[in-house]
Length: 453
Image (cartoon, helix red, strand yellow):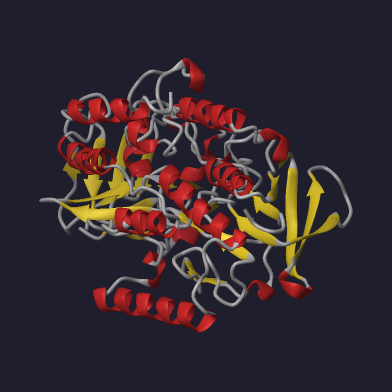
């Protein structure tokens, strides 16, 4: 155990912040968790959308959940490594489906917080206004209760762990002519239910899981739904199987003053709404220049292994930046990383580094590692915004973290289940959540879970 218990600030009480708090406390530290909401859960805490006056922005709404959302990963693979996500009384389960709705994930996180006595560590309805470097490697954190006025309260911590998520600040597609287009625009961050789109013509921009789900959701009420996908070849629109009002297009070329939207394939549609399912921006408004990191085209720079800024490591760290993996198997698709185990392993690493059990390389060595990583990205032709996109390497990264912490590597069944789910999703895009052929892996998972239940 560390010779001195460090007082640590954890920003955010979503899945990343909760498991970070647990791992830090397991190492003998004293974490204080700051959370803007009145409950734990982070992005899994369903909330009303932003004000109608700000349909493209984040406003005060943190969550990006829509009412019909179900997980796109099987629950067995999703859970923390020693706290299985099973349909059981211990997790407060009320939705036994293998791909449950978002409410079930929130119940699981609440059960995790109760099981490890984390709620007493959280300061709810408290926003972090600023994080500033002090002498001797310490950090001054200024926070304020929501609704209070004034400059807030400043406290000094030995280190800060940033767990504020990255599904809040919308990324908006650039569309030539959009300023003169008379229709309505909104971002998927502010989408909740399909009823407002009755009898309307809606264009959904994107190829992610949210674009897929939301386009189908809106098609239940809208007159027409048109998906604009950057990766779609230049061709005429293609009606989607099983739908009479849903089409796939190439990307939008421009918007016109007469209300029409022209696609790169030359076709055009007069639309009422453009829905941007175009992802999110990393945003750390509480950090100043002395944090030594910048965010440029969604690259948080520089970070050693996506966690530590070399100049101020280990007193500042980031949990949960990696966002998705793309792989090809006779087709191209995007699949989310398995987030909770990744958060847990990053948190174990950070906690052990702070306790002195693990020693980081020198600042110079860490910077060389960062530069070498960027060179690899450039050689692949990847844009800067894909810096934290884990292309086929999430398990390699997870297992590296596990080795650093002298912890077992990710279970083989979890890896196989992840890849099988990707293949199944490609083969059954409309029904993969309810049809599968990997019951043998489910059996392996349940056998493994017995030691924790």
